[in-house]
Length: 631
Image (cartoon, rainbow, N blue to C red; front, side, top):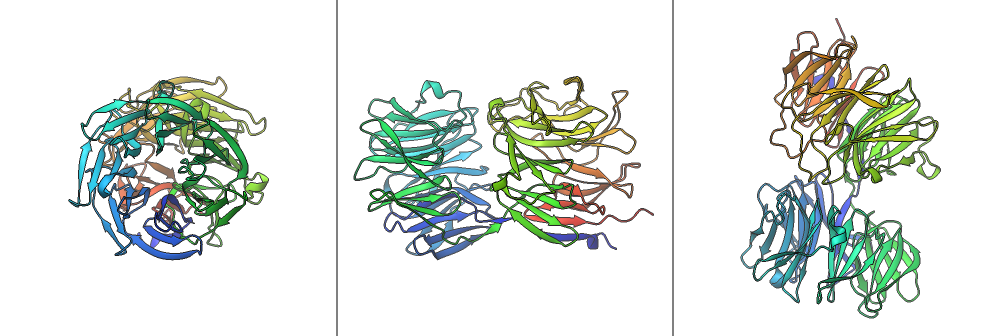
């Protein structure tokens, strides 16, 4: 067989109609505009009442859009993630136009809002830049870059038409900035007790009041713009936004713990309506006596304010392919894949070559096996799920079941996971929450149900990789923490954690000037092999010495703002090593250290099935490689 013929594209594993934002047409609110994430993303216009799909425009090269807004002239604007472009859709001409990158080298437009004279304002990541698009001039202008020094996100913004002010919600250390459009002056106006929050996540203005939703915690601060004072706080708000003000009753609506509530702006009272919604809403509007909302699951609800009746509509949205975020061979021999952003899990059977999809858990960053169970480490708040592969997948019956989360420890992304079969323990290494440093090691006992958390065991480092041998956990760190946190350390460390003593017994820098160790494996001879950026090192666990170190791959992180993961590799039965690094699938001879690139791009992750076939992800597709037999 040739090298090329050894590859097989297994195909797409997960599909979903993933929507991140949406807007109702102000003239005919039965018309809804949204973007279904891809790649490629699709701009979609639907009549949610009839279910008719009025427009479906593919957007080649676009992953998705977090931000949609309608200008005062009725045009629809959308800001994309990953490539940071601004698009304009004209309902009259039905033309979708790419306006380019408003701010060069920005990956995300996080929010858009309408201003006067058809203008659209937007905020970006990672330069915390504010821009404006002027339709008269047909061009974008950077209003202010690095609105708050050392911060990366303008996560939300809203324009105050009455006062000619913009309000900007900043992260990943929360700020609320008032920007005077006439003078360019900026003023910090975040209420003091929110200063330790991460994001001013969503904003809206109703009358003379600014509503600011904080993340995490889901509090909504209500600020009187005439006095600049906070007058009320709503708690546990899980709808992304509040509704517009009801033109008849002057109430606004929101959901708390999934139940519909109202807030009376004049009497400062809020009350539950005992109506539970199946998902958090993205956008709402009023049509006559109905509150109408677009839900994050792609459906639309219609709530009659007088009769209290709730009706759901399920318009057909085009399902798109989900990028693969994690893969693992389960104890049942199947290959499991986790989906990016929207989540979900796919199970591929190598014998029957068929796949099944499940959509009950969110974005899985890492997976591990222990006994007959698979454990899923889920973003956000480092949630752990347990799935018994000997029983049918049925989340309604607790399979998979949610075990715990690490929200109280400010942990967020569990990339490094491994089962310790001889101890019947699961080990999980995590990156912390946005804007913070210091990961954690967590050990979970599935028999007792107890878990122990060891935060910041290597100060100001996150845990990027784990392997295990004879009662010792060997971990590799990353100097990065949550997005938006500035590293205080300069070099990744290798550490040894004694499982019985429950403490770090050794740590050091195995390779100088490397920022992350993203892969560790036990070699057949018992040595520890690791990849620190593009550098392979071999570590003797007994002597605690480096036996070999050499840069084998042209991979470095010096210009990266953060790295969560990169390399994966495995020793195989034919005596060779196979792995992925820097988007490449490689072969490595462990004796000569000679490397060979077998696939040059879009190769991530790695696992091996019971027959020795190697699986890796390539965007939304699962690929299989059959290694040559040993001669």
